[in-house]
Length: 389
Image 1 (cartoon, one colour):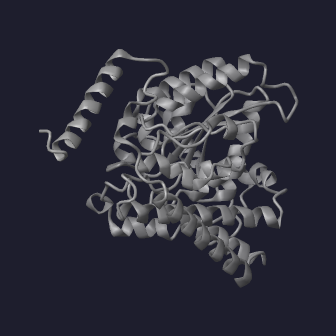
Image 2 (cartoon, one colour; image 1 turned 180 degrees about the vertical axis):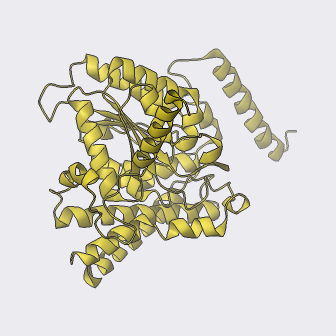
């Protein structure tokens, strides 16, 4: 073996060690005592009992919402829905690390992050019912509307972060002013050129952005192994972006890693790439059938690593969770489910002509012509029923 090949071999062995995701809680809920994670353990040291219970509560409520939304789609109340089942820790852990002034750019299944940003969860379903293009005020919540074009919002987030930087909102030393940006996307999005371009722009501009990849193992029916030959987080190094791989089913590890990355961004340290290794336990969307491409053994492997079970086991072991806590949370989750059902069924149906509204900010000749044609088309049915045709 030549010297160069030998050096490459040693580097690969070193990378393999680093490829082990950061983990603070083992799947059984016990604390992981590893000297390499000591700086991250320090970041969660200030989480008191209420904060720890709050993380479990967040995940349970978001899952209750997700379960109800999936059921509503099956009942024909929603046109489509993108479940987050199994990804609660990745979303709640990162979302709770955000400061109020930080800006988040989601894809289309970040319901947990929406919840942490104060979006009323039933509002999320207006999009999936076809009522509007996204039913919340993105400026009020510092949470952008959902993006359905895979990977495109990574560039939007990076551009926004460059604007924040140029507005003098980075590295001022004022914790209420310094601002970071975060973009959420899946493993499949990393195969899109937009994400690579975002990494390039973020790196050379030292943009205050965190690029957060939820690697849920499947880009619809394409496994991660068919998308990349190396762990996804290593892509950041090629652009000069500090990167970390974290156990995405460990809410404490996600919180600690995201908090560090956001702090770096706010203080002028530039971008970070995070790969949260998790699993989409449900379908890609409700139009998908994962049994066609996944095995039951694989699904069981990840059920045994359920993020909610992990955090609950940890709280029980620490004496911070009991039957009374569980009963109160179960009641809260049931009430949320009922509120979601009532809200969605009360939305009704928008007028078909509303599809022409707000397509462009100003009048557009093509849309105007199409809207007029559609109005005549709808009127023709009324005339037929009235016996005029």
